[in-house]
Length: 235
Ligand SMILES: [Mg+2]
Image (cartoon, rainbow, N blue to C red; front, side, top):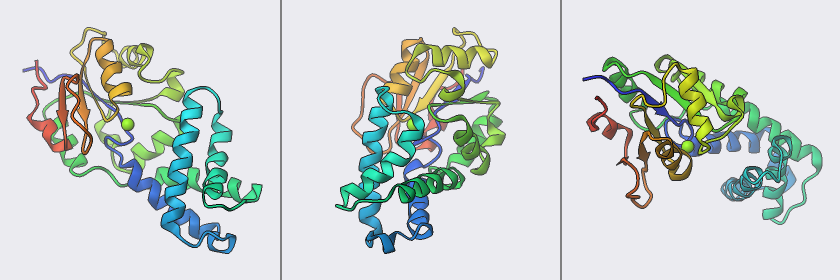
């Protein structure tokens, strides 16, 4: 049996984005002194930020907001969501603190390291293909102990194109020295970016879906990373 090449998404698939983001937001709340700015409830602050962040990312994906604006605007909107008016310096300081802090958080999904160790021992070539900023995603991979398992880490920022655009998959495969008819399997949490994107270029895709409704169009679905070890990942 030939172990198939495995391409992994990073955020919300291996790296526990939600937990890590909340750890960074708590640290920022403290470091920037938000209690003095009227933000007394850290849980409400996190909820307001997450709502603002979702909105800003939708704007970014639609090409209506650039990276620099997104980074401070989401904090300005988080204040406004709580009925507060921040000064510009505070939003900027929070934006900078978050960018500097969040990639260094190290929470992974359960069993991530053990599962990657097993897959590596079985001989799988493993690559990260992630939509995200180059300088940020590499810090996450390095700091959380994922680096030894992956021969390459490709970000949409460096590729110049985001999943689910077919070019993202083609560029990542080609630069890894793999042809597009190699039996590559993509593993990720996003139906649109990871599963549909990969299956549209002829790869098989595993939907990592811990909590959501089951989608039938993925090649396979797993609720935990550990279930990957039971899949037919050899040809
Ligand atoms: Mg993801």
